[in-house]
Image (tube, rainbow, N blue to C red; front, side):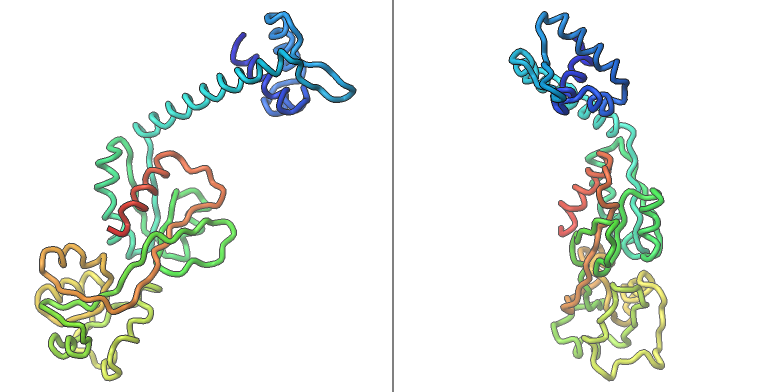
Length: 289
């Protein structure tokens, strides 16, 4: 008895139909009939009996089905395991994200992913948030990330990974009183508009702090961070942007009570490749650390 015979036998037993088994196996019905006849001849006992238009297992057939299921499931599991090992040697994970996350969020996980799975390649692409569904649909990326509330899209699975917090940032020690911090570290440098990430920060500023007649205008988050490190002004910036500088004492920060969800998204009902699932695992485990 061989694997093809057992597969044909299992499908006929499951579907109670030779034609149904043939469709499932992508072979002709006579081919399935030959496999079953050959198996019955080898065993020396019938495996099926016809009852009208219905096909049912004989007692020997029921006993054989238990072993056939076990053998085939073991082989299928072995094939999946070997394919996963092959994927780990040659796989690639492509992720797309908005400009902020592709620069300051996703790179945080690149080292951990590489240490765990050195045979895999990680590609991080930058696209506007409104283009991300198209990028996923075209297959140009396996996963996409953006800051903001998940929108309505029946074709995508959207999962909140963490919250990106906004912080008041200054070059020296600060307290919890935002007005006092602003006075101490003037001028305030307004962060540029980066969509959902910076919406709402005006709520925490005193009304006399406006964008009119500013002494310093810097149209990049990175540029504002550099200015503050050099001792110029203060601002409100995302925590991940300043994480390293905070750890080294170059910047001081306090939460302003505002945050923005970081969303991971991918095509609904998609069969994600094993390397993609591994990257998702790294993100889920370390995104709040």
